Image 1: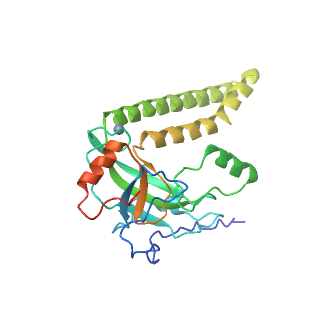
Image 2 (image 1 turned 135 degrees about the vertical axis):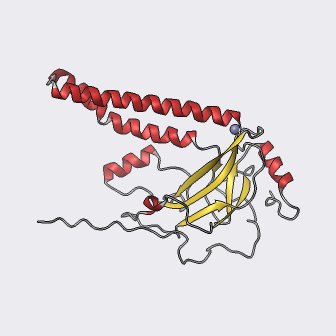
Image 3 (image 1 turned 30 degrees about the vertical axis):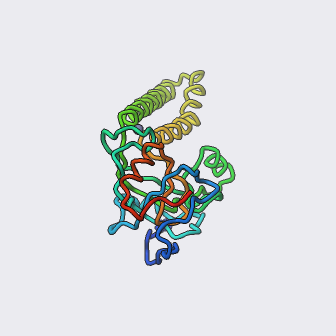
Length: 247
Ligand SMILES: [Zn+2]
């Protein structure tokens, strides 16, 4: 008998839905509590003309439906040649794609599903918060950002190498029937590998993240944690009349 596996369904970001925000105000009136900080900068966003590449899998529907319109957005303004995290002159740039989740705390929350939430969902067999918004942009990075990314990447490779070696050892012990060693390598493989994999994902995220976003309250603006030098440079670069919202 054939088992029928239901076809996965996907959201269509930016679909036919109208822009949900209030377009009568050119800038958000003020920073939006509680998840932002008064020293954040505001970056203008817009819906890209074409869908972002390779995002389809992120839009797969789950048992926890989205409560907001799924959105793909891009940075809609030039950024200064200063690193947002360290305030140093940029030595390059990095394409950053940030995911926001429809969590219990906020419908476009900036934090990845935390390890606690993941474990909670696993234990209760509940669904974890789905992706609600994807923001992409070309962000300036400095020497320090590049070095940090390199270190994170080496750590990630190291953990992956240990996981691979452990898996090979587990297979060897299993095939050679060395029973007293099996539980050791077995538990290192599972749950060890699951934890290792979660750490790898977390570190990899950090390695490619030169910018810290806050939750998105209005699809035309992102609040970004920024170094004072970046803030200053951004204000200098801004044409008159389009300054950041008053504090
Ligand atoms: Zn930097």
